[in-house]
Image 1 (cartoon, rainbow, N blue to C red):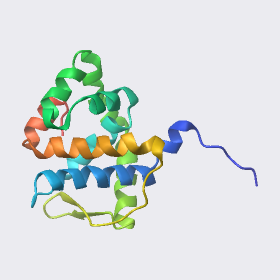
Image 2: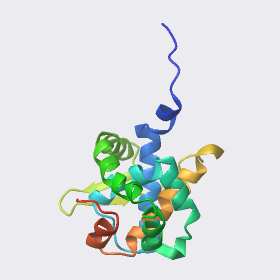
Image 3: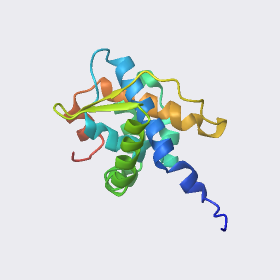
Image 4: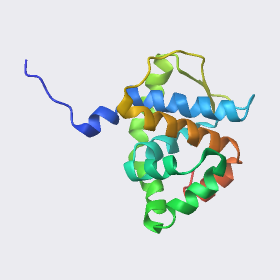
Length: 162
């Protein structure tokens, strides 16, 4: 059997790591808005924001206290970067679904199908490698930002249609 080397993209854009990022997004959301859970559609925005290098750099450069509106203003300095979020969300639907499935299987996530919300469960997964810590921190920061706003405002600011 031949050994197949994974591409740098495949090392990051895979359901296992995606589920870990989604879990961190959920943990950030739940920490910011105690007692409230993020809606399922928010999870379809997380990976397109965090797994896109230039967008993640803007997330990292925006203070957590500044919020989503400041991030969008910075991202919108180059208008096409903001519009690309919607296209990436569509392109990454499959990865997001696979990541949600992996998160549920690993008991990191739980979906309430009646209400359409997702709980990030208490868990102690292993620490990510140093090279991926920025992705993890960015996912948590985005979760906190989303928790501060009504869903329709999140979608409106990011120029995406749920």
